[in-house]
Image 1: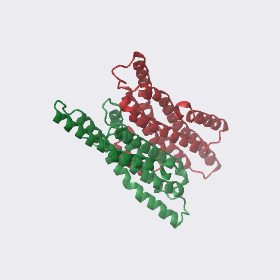
Image 2: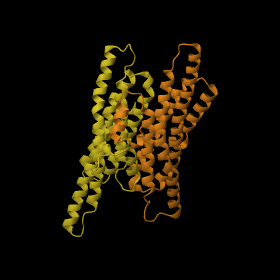
Image 3: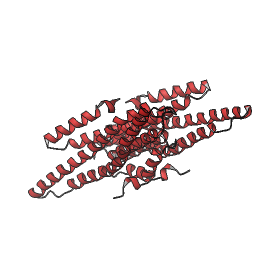
Image 4: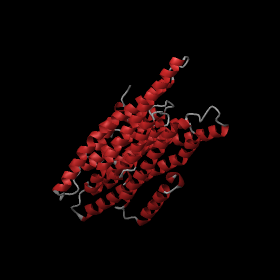
Length: 198
Length: 198
């Protein structure tokens, strides 16, 4: 499979617009989140002013160090999201003529749906983690980049919401009640964390 | 200048993360909006069910026809946003040794800031227009793509908010009070329109 990172923006948009089910919202959410983390890295690279205190410099450097690797994580998740949904559709296409085939197909669907739940949950975790550090960038970053920081936080929140919608959509088809309850609890906790809501 | 549409996603993210002021939040907002419109085109291409009524088919086709050209508009605005902000910075760098130079520089800054206000306002208009039609996609599109529609609407709202933040940020430096009042009024109207809030 082509990596989305290596597609041009025009190719990515054409792939999203095509009637094929993947790439879909999960991939777009991850890439939107990666635009958010990239902008935060830019803002965290600008001093607040010529008079930045040592503490302010340290807070920005620490936020930048935490946020920078999340861009790569989100690009990986953009690919993984499409692959995990392709696996769900492949499982649904398995033969179901005999009882043995039906059983194998049911197991394959459940395993694939679980994967298609875990990937957007990872996206949600990555966005929530970036948002925890975004507020240091907003507080100590250069004031002239304030609207950039605002856009970045808005994109990360939209990405977190979109990832959560995908988690819940795929969770609906799962039968493992313990996994469903734990995943829904973590999704709600991440969505309603102070950093995600602020 | 390279068009962002022709950059790979990885190149776009590296450009956003670089300490250069452009591309910044305005470009990212436009591209996030274009991901939203692309996903809506995909969902509008799927029938709701095998029993779609003629009215439902017509509503989806109409929404699709309205949304599809907005992707290209938003890609153009991604480029225009960076160019308009580059023009602001170029104007600030003009010489200011003599009174004549100071006057010319002030005029150039005002003209450039006006451009850097009008571009994100166009982005906001494009996103608000897409959101007006997104609700037909949510109502008549395929239910299995519900979470995709949700991600698309979330991205368009984040793009609209980000564009509005950029309008207001650049509006602050303008001296033409009539233009400022009219632009702020349109920005507020678009942000608080039923389609943008729903």
